[in-house]
Length: 398
Image (cartoon, rainbow, N blue to C red; front, top):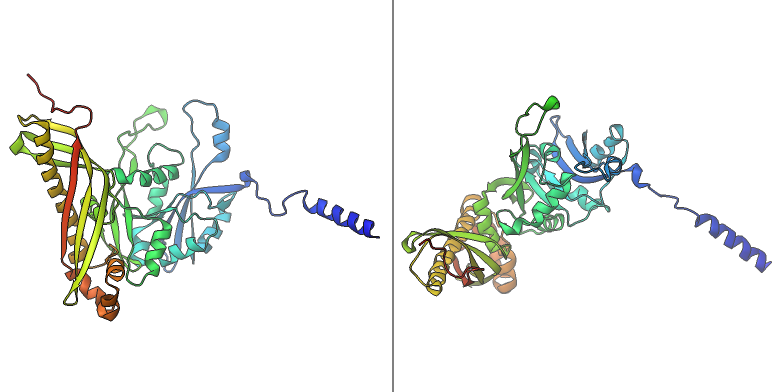
């Protein structure tokens, strides 16, 4: 009897192991690579636009030089974001899969209304990677999902690479789903999210018949969106965003250009390396005081002009101008956040709490919205120029 029971168990296990009861074939799925969220024109409704990688076309084009798969872009509306996503079954031949999504674009209308529904939906979605980038669009997000971004197809991958390389210019900021959701959950923090805007592409393209078409639009990632809790209150320009990036320790490797006419240069460009920002605080008479220290190394990468100074003297004098320029950039971004928007998107509350816990608990936390705009901040940059890349001497014409 035991042998018969064991045989029956083995046979039943063989039946269940023969396949996947909930399998989803890849050619039955729509792999989302980018998604945009807008407020619909109808009241209390959401508009969701997705970009889906065209796998079948990619397979058909494999081995054909110069041909790439065009992504499918579609829009659906609903009373909630989930409802809108579910309504894609009426227009898409595939079930949406989010595991490959690289970017969430929030339209300006939705950002001003509030981003909690967006973050709530995606943080509840088990397929979404919390490292997906979040950006705020100037205008409607749907235009950005359909627009060309970079060189990759589908352009959702270009979004991902643009965000990855943003530190090279430092004129936009890191903003991932995990960071944005953490800021919203913190009573004293506010999100600061990268901005995207449309600009004319250099290549106009061709219409059918070879006729030249109007210039297409491409996507530029620069600047930042300032939030008070979950609502958009304003924008940072690319220059203001880089000033804030220094404060947030997001400018480890970037290029700063200074004018030095007194030394014979129209301009000198310096590439910073391993830049690091440290912030110290103290509380005096109930008011926090901040001191920002920016340190690192740098190298001269371009000189427009000539000088009679030796290379060591050039490095010393350009370093002085470089550090002054960095301090000005930080001051520009800081004053915009503190005085214009009066919103702590810099994490200053967390720094005061960590370094001055007793003063924070004894009353600063209750007065933080009023205290933050008044905090005095001292800024000190000390980037040491250690080389002049390959050519140690300035270019001269004899």
